Length: 194
Image (cartoon, rainbow, N blue to C red; front, top):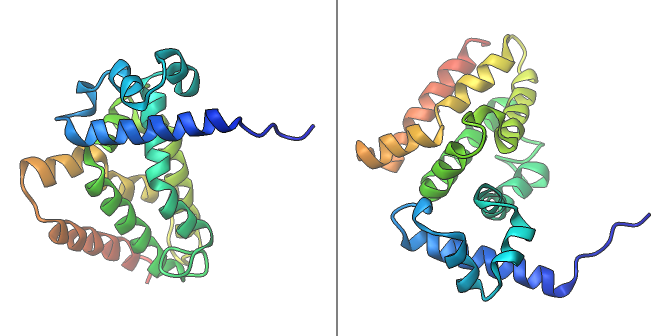
């Protein structure tokens, strides 16, 4: 049976909700300060429409995260180097981590709220599983590296949203310094297989 195409008004409503949520979250101190009723009103839809489309706040956060992440995902899946699949793994690992760090710096409130919502463990979230699997698979391509499942978890810990928020927000660490420190850490990990 062919997959049903969403109705035009449903697609339009979804886009309006994501745009409204994005704008409201950008103006707020934190995403927790924005109610679902405010998002629905700003998007010009009823609360029922919002809940049917996204389920709850966590579902809305995941959808907004995925929408913002789409250009990176496209680059990772089919783009050119340094993120694309034809990039040698020793260059791709640091590029993937740098892209994820920059994404989290650019979307600090959203990623922090997303990682703090749900099961209480960011490691059980779908988006974490995708990044971990991708990183582990690329690490597996590097001869001499072992324990790549653990290594992928360890490298991803360096870009956890709460750590990014602590360093960028509370400590005031400049973006370029964070990127350089992450590149140094990644180079040290990868040098163990040299």
